[in-house]
Picture: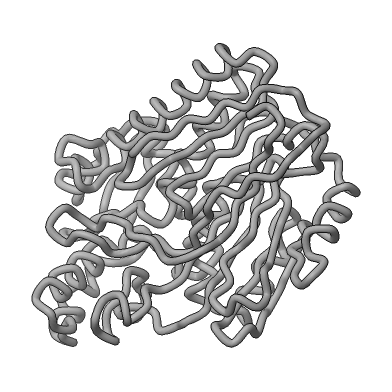
Length: 373
């Protein structure tokens, strides 16, 4: 495989486990591997994957020492396994599950990773005026139960949960204390946890001296470390529900995530969905696919949910205020809205050529590769 390089293409809706009883819900905005010949490269390519967090993580890396690269990829995937034991709300022994049981009106000491991902989540809650909110756990639970019962959640059920939700009811007590100021609050990290795990995996690869790698988290978040040999970046085809636009981006030391609400045709009803608006308690009503490029997996993962919820009118100012972000909203009819604070998302027949030209103007390969923040 020495003369091949990876691009990734957004294809179709794939399944994501909500829990073992529910079976498949959804991961949307998927990316599948596409190979293209790269005759300039003789550097070996190493590829590994592992089922973690209810999905498949894949990592590919170019490195002149394949044995070292293989060890790096194994340890990066093992780091994601470890983080699953920290952030899972399905595993009763996880750090998150313990906090959800014991953190009500009590300062619970948590692991450094859990503290950090909560701290970063609150940053995006403030940025979005509460549209991004990891305290939606009780709302997610009631809609799962409604889906199992094949009925919509009632207004009475949602009203009872109003006091359970609200990011401002989380208090951080440095260096590693967390307290809930609500008796029924429960955190769900599904909208940021995979991105955080991607960033930690990238840190492991860097610690081994890996400079060219692609990390694919369940086909919803992708991080490009450096660039493939002889290429300006990692080419990613973004989600396009219209099959007309074919938006693309070249990743180099940055990440892309996609969010899209569950199509009614997959759930067999028109009232459910896996993305919940924390302010209304209802599944968000939109058929738009949103892709966001950001500097880290944590940022792109969190922002993808945020920008889908707020829409392009409120979302564009958020994107333009960030120097390392770009976003595109695509409708099933092929209408697009684009915003950028720096990176370029290109569309159309010459998208790939334009993406490579745009990336060629950047300093990919000479960027600061310290730990992701």
